[in-house]
Structures are given as structure tokens and as C-alpha cells.
Length: 210
Length: 341
Image (cartoon, rainbow over all chains, first blue to last red):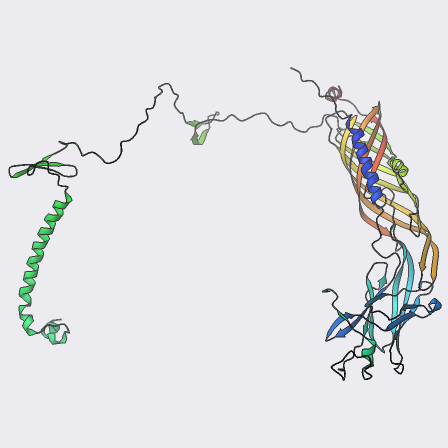
């Protein structure tokens, strides 16, 4: 007995499968316009650190005014009225050189005016990052200079500064080593024997634990 | 030892000279008592070893297996003269079993069907199923035609708002209607200005090519219909521009407007795809496939990363290809002709 040839049954499938595939592709195209999870502009992030009881910790500064030299209108980046543990310090793109001043404020009008200056020398190159993040600059750091009134050192964490949300610089400060004369009220801002304590209000922060 | 016996004062338990004189007499008495006790105990033991069951006060008694009768002064052994006392166990129940004389008796087989001795005798010789699976063998000849297609899938996606596209011409060779080596070559371009962005991205029409193979699951069926899985390796060398760039820095009061022209990159990528092909009219067919892309290597002389890669696409890892196909059929075998019917 001869077996009947099996009829082809493929002709009904392609239309449905094609429509499904088309919907999937259009859907994936619609979902492909993803968000930019980095910064759209390249803004170097700077963290403040100090050695406390033998350990290097990130500290919060209050009463430190930060501004760039040559900024239009002498605009201030940080007024010092609030505590900051890190700060975005934008670099100039028209020249490969940017200077910032850290002015340590004091409530005592007779106190000595203490300032530090940090200068960055770098090269600038624009680059296309992605459709979501667009075009941003890449800064290749060449030289970092600083004064050491209150600053111990400045460290460049990443030689290339991009739009990735990373900590690019670390500024390490001196901390007072002498104990305050009035141990009952060590945070007294009126204590004339401890001017550094007037400037810094250190809130210890463990980077990872808290 | 002799000295010790003659000098009993050296022995701590020595009872004294008076008792020592009577020691021999006592020991003889003890020995005689021991012999009498032994004889008595032996008799008692023998008597207790027998279960004495007197049927008459002085003539008959039973042992465990033997009955004894006393006639006068002699003891006569009588075997099985009296039935054993009834057992305390309940009587066994016996179920009657019909014995079928015609029941076939089990036969052990010591040799297999071919007369070869077995390792151990068996009750049954199993008959193995001799039907084997049909082997996968090609129905169509090794060269079964050549197909040429035009991929216009990105035209449909462009209508859906896609701002780039890749269009190619491809050709495949049918080997047994089973495997299809494929070569694709085409041009890709892009022109995109995304909303809320600071650039316009343009890729001039750039060449790309792909080489790969398709596996037809319906290789025994008519070549007019295919359901296939495929792999591709692609290469593209292309240039692109990023125009209308606008970067502003509010703190320093800077606004930079410029373009990045003539950026060049090369890319190597891969694709896995699944698709079908359907005969429309005579030698003309339509087909589509859905593709998943993987970047293997993208090199750019600049610091930029290309957004669109010709033949690959942009951000989405999926794409669809829709092709119009013309097929030059190969020679037909009788078996293939029967399949076509």
C-alpha cells in the first residue's frame, strides 16, 4: 500500500511569524533609545580627605569658599555655608588651564586670611560617547599644582577625565594635631587658640560603611 | 619442694602438727564420699533425662522416642508401639490445589537463536525490535540551486521611525536543500538628530559584507519552503560625522559649537538569525529573518565610539531582514520530484 505524500503545511505560518517578528523588532527599536547613565558633560569630581587618628577618611568641609580664577562675575562654586565632602569642579575648555581657590573663612575678623590655590593643566578633546549621552570632552591631565597652607596633597585618581561619574581628584588636608586647650568645649568657635578648628568642622564619614 | 613439705612452719596455712596427723584419714573419707556422690548424681541425671509417663504404675513408661515395658526383672524396649502424644500446635490448614497435568512446564534456554551458548540460562528469548530510525540523508542533490535576494527590511523600519538603514544583496547556494552558504554585501547609512541631544549623527553610505551559512530544517521537503537557522560574520569599514555639537559650561560661561568630521572606524560583528522563505510565484520567493547582533571588535582611530555600524545597526541588538528572492533551481532527482508532488 503506497503511502500518500504528506501535504506541505508551511504556507499558513509565515504571515503570522512575520508579523510577530516585525512587532518584536519595532518594539526593540523603540526600547533601544536608552538613557544616559553617565554625566552628559565632563565634570571632574573632587573629594576631600584627611588623616584622622591614623586613618585616611573622607571629611566634610564647612566654611570653605571655593571659586575659579577668571570665572565670569567672580562666581563662586561653593560658598562654604554648607558642608561638602565632594564637589564637581568644571574645567575650562577654551584654554587647557584652570585654577581654583579654596578660601578658609573665619568668623574672627582678626584671624589670618588663609587660602590655597589648585591649578590643573590638561589637554582637551571632544568625543562622541553615545546616542544617549551625546558629545562630551575628554581631559587628559598633564600637571596639577597646589599650595600647602591647609592642603597636604592633591591626587589625580584617573589621568583621563571623562563623563563617567567617578571621583577624579582627591584633596588631602592637614588636620590640627594639638589638643584644644579647653577640653570641655572643643568645638567652641570662639577658641582663639585653635583657629583651624574654627575653619574645619569635620564629620567623619566612612566611605563604604555609611 | 621436699624441704618445704618437711618444714611446714614456712607455710602460712599450715594447720599445726596435731591436725597434720589426721589429714590422711580425712582425705580418704572425702574421696569415698565423692565417688558415692558421683554415682548417685549420674543415676539421677539419667532418670531426669527421660520423661517418665507411667501408663500402669509399674510396667510401662515412655522415653522421648522409645517405649519401655518391664516384664519381670527385665526392661524390654518397644519401638513405636504407642502413638505420640498430641501436639499443642494448631493443625495446619491445607488449601487444595488443582494440579493441571496439561500445564506447560518451564523450559530454560541455554542457547540463543543463533545457537550460541548463553552466559546463564534464561526463561525467555526476547525478540529485538528490528525497526531502526530513518537516517538523516539528503533528498536533493548536492547542488540544488542558487538564490539571489534583495534585503529591504530597513525600509519597513524606516517607516516606523528608524533613522538608519542597511540594504544589501545576497546570494546563497543550496547544498542538498540542507545547508546554504550565504554571502551578503550592501550599504548602510544613518542620519539622526535625537531629541534632547547636542549633535547630529551622520554616516555616509558605507560598504559592509557578511559571510555565513543557513541550516534548513525542512531539507526533505520542497525547496520552495524553508525554515532555517543561520549564522553570519560581518565586517564594515565606514566613516561618520557628528555635526551640530553644542556643549555649554554654565560656570565658566563657555559655549562650544563645532563638528567632528571624517571619523573613521572598522567593525567586526556576528549575527544569529532565524527565518523562513516562501515561494510566491514560479522562481520568485519572499523571505524574512530576525537577527540578533553581537559586536566582536570595533576600532576607532578617534576617541569616539560609533553609534551606527553598517549592516549591524545601532543600539538595538535585534533587527529584521525582509528579502525578495529569485531562485535558479538545480537539477532534480526522481526522489526530489516525488517530494515536490
